[in-house]
Length: 239
Length: 239
Image 1 (cartoon, rainbow over the protein chains, first blue to last red):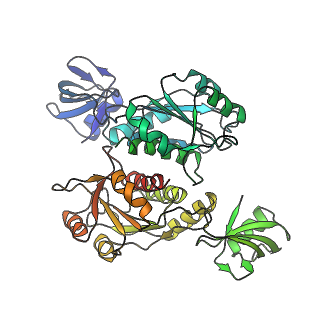
Image 2 (tube, each protein chain N blue to C red):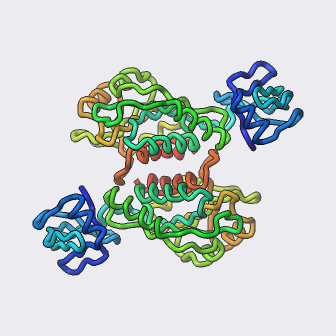
Image 3 (tube, each protein chain N blue to C red):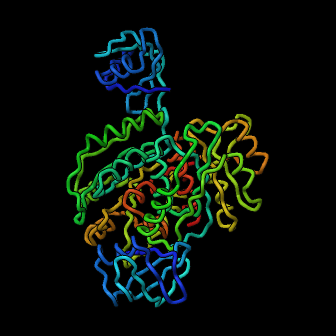
C-alpha cells in the first residue's frame, strides 16, 4: 500500500503537489480511475479515485475517510538535543516516527556542541517515514529552542520526564513511571540532553518546574539511542 | 574512559594487537606508566599499567580485574534476517550492542532477498559499539544460517519468540510474555523475518518446535526497527 500526502484536501477533492503528482503519475504510472490513498498528515487517510493523472498537478476524488489511521494511544513529545553527527539525529527521527511519536522538539542545551539545526530535512524524513510505516499523522518537527525556554513553556498538565543523572536525587526507571501513567491519557514529554549532558542549572530548573528525573537503565546510551529507547518504552507500555 | 580490546590476556600481562597498539600509543599518545583499561570481549575489564608503549605491539600489566563489566541481567539472542540495505542491519548491530544483546544471528529466510552477509564488518561494529558503551562483553555475531536450521538448532531450555503474523493464532504482545519471563534467567531467543516475512512453512516449523508467536504492537516496523524494539523490550523489562 503506497501512501501519498496532501495538505490540500477539500471536502471531496484532493490535490497533489508537483512532487507527489510526479511520483504518482510518472514513477508509479497511476492513471485516471486508479484508486490511490492519501494522508493529510494530521491522522486522516483518504481512499480516493484519481481524476486527473497530471504529473505536475494531479487531483483525486475522496471516496472514503479513515480518521486516526495508524495512530498510537498516547501523545508523546520528544525534546532531544541535536547530536554532533546529524545522521544520528535523522536516524532518530525516522525510527521514532515508525514506532510512534507526535512531536520532535530539537532543544539546544548550554553544553550542546551543535547550536543550530535545519529542520526542513528532518520534516521530509518524518513525512517519508510516516508514509512508509502507514501512518496518517506525520510527527511535527518543531524549530529548535533553548532547553531553558522549552522547560518553561511545557504545559502544566503534561507528564514531564528528564533523563539526567542528578547527584542528589534517585532517578526512577522510566518503566515504573510509565506503568501507571501511560494509560492516563495525559500528554507525555521526555527531555534528552546533549553528549555533554544538561548543565546542572538546566537540570535544576527542570526539577523546579515539575520535570521528573528518570533513568533508562544501566546501559550507557548515545543521545539518539537514549531518545529512541524512551520512545520505545512509551510505545511498549501502551500495549 | 577509553577502552581497548585484547584477545591476548595472560595472568598478569595484556598484549594489544597492532591496531589497538597504534590507537593507544600513536593516536592517544599513551606512554609507559599510563593507566589503561582493556576488555577481553567476554565480560572482563582489566585496569592495567602500560609497560611497553610500542605502536606496533604494546603490552600492559594487569592491576585489577572487574568481571561482568557493563553486563545486562539477561541472555538474548537476536536471530534477524539481513535487510536489503546493509546499513540498516549494521545500524541494528550497533544499537543492539549499546542497549544489550549477547548474540546476533543473521538468518536467511526462504523469502530473504539478501542470501549472503559478510560478518567481519558487523563484528568490528559490535566491538567498537561495545567499547564506546563501556561493556566488557562484545556481542557474538554468528555466521548466517538458514531460518529452518536455526529453528531446529535452538536449545530446548531457551524462551523462543517469533515475530510473525499467523492467520490462525492470536499473537501475544511481547511485553506480556516478558513480564514474567525476563527475570526467570532462561536464555531468550527472538526471531525476526525478512522484508518479505517468513514463509508459512518456516513459521509453522517454528511453532512445532516451541517458538511462541509474539507481536510488537500496532506500528508497522521495518525489519531492523522491529529487531531493535524487541531488544529494547527485553532490556526494559529487565529493569
